[in-house]
Amino acid sequence: MRKFSESTLVIATHNAGKLREIKELLLPFGTNVVSAGELGFDEPEETEDTFTGNARIKAHYAAQKSGFPTLSDDSGITVDALDGAPGVYTADWAETENGRDFPMAMTKVWNLLEDKNAPEPRTAAFNCTLCLAWPDGHDEIFEGRVEGRIVWPMRGKLGFGFDPIFLPKGKTETFGEMDPVLKKEISHRADAFAKLVSGCFA
Image (cartoon, rainbow, N blue to C red):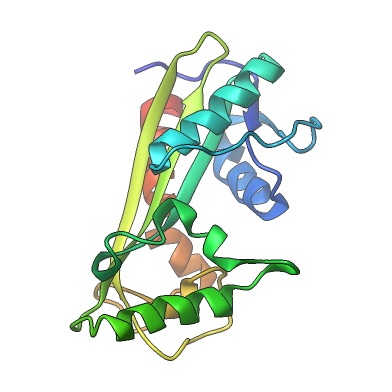
């Protein structure tokens, strides 16, 4: 596995919140972190049907344009009774003409489960795939996952996305109700980042 030895790391995101979260995680390593958005890069079209495929597209695109190693992530929720949907289309399910509407998307998930008369527990998982790509084309992939189930009605105002209907396995609070510090410890992204740090930064 290739170690990260450069001084600058590009994050393939235009999301300020995601950039801040990643900067905090990499703070102990003294890495200069800059986002693709800050560099003025556009976002490549995500044409793959897997988290790994889309993470690779984003990481290699920004690595080639910047000349620096680039980290990307692709994440989403998979619902077993919906054959893994929304999956890589998690954000797309929330798209409207006026921006993303996640309450609408969560309602869609629940209605589809009801239409199928899906048995309880309605199992699901949050998935995160990280790709660290170098300008020479090499990459390393790290996958994180947290198991749980879909609950209704929506619970909690914390978190984002599908968090209010996702109850992690063994917990009594949805990601929407959970203290963000606790969520960060058990989340799919934390799982993937622990593997990234162990593999490439430790």
